Length: 146
Image (cartoon, rainbow, N blue to C red; front, side):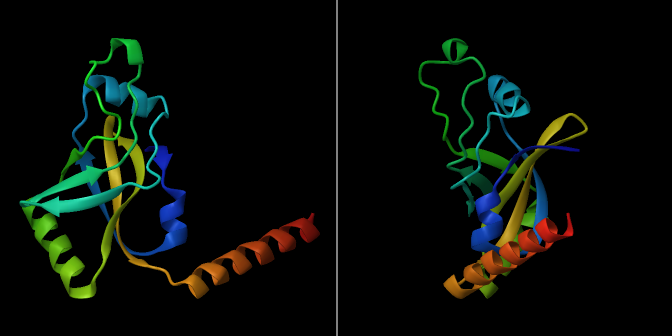
């Protein structure tokens, strides 16, 4: 399992409560681009509409832009492949606890591209400040240990 793209902002802006693994419906040249590490999940989010899950605003450029169709849009909405049971579970948790569905990373598993989704609650400003403080303390401890 190799990580191809990671949404580092999601870990900073959200408290991740549960994770799910979903397949993603991509075109051939998009698969090549993702495996080459050209995908960007910053600012992306997932929606559930009509009993299906969708990944919105994920930037996956064409592997070779000149060979891609002229109408290709890198930030198009892509379908996520989840079971109906998983979708019902996610919808129930999202409505009950007011959570968001956020893509965390793109990775390969058995040569297929998968997306790790997280049920997340937004962090407040003081939570983010505390995260920054912890990071700074860890950094100073590592410096002094060397």
